[in-house]
Length: 139
Image (cartoon, rainbow, N blue to C red; front, top):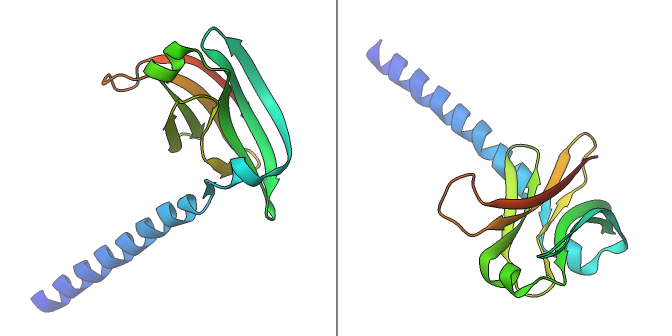
């Protein structure tokens, strides 16, 4: 009886891990480092002009899918030294890049109903702090 309980617990834990393991892999496949570089029909969905540069959320078609990415153009020297460019998708996924001239985040597949938010965030060790400016839209 003891062996059966242990086997059942191990099987349940294995199933749970395999199910949890598949979600991040599926989410990871929605990211593309190539989309911002090679996308066609690129347009700016929303932008904000700031004293750090122009923050944009852009979209374009790469392969068979549409992608969204954050971009900063004409960044100031302060942005280059002290800020990161970030793209948030929903409440659970994001990417960040160090600003160095006109900079782009990786692209994320455009999904209907999902919220996309691009932010300039001050480099800081304070969790959740340092946001300078964000722009967002819901697909």
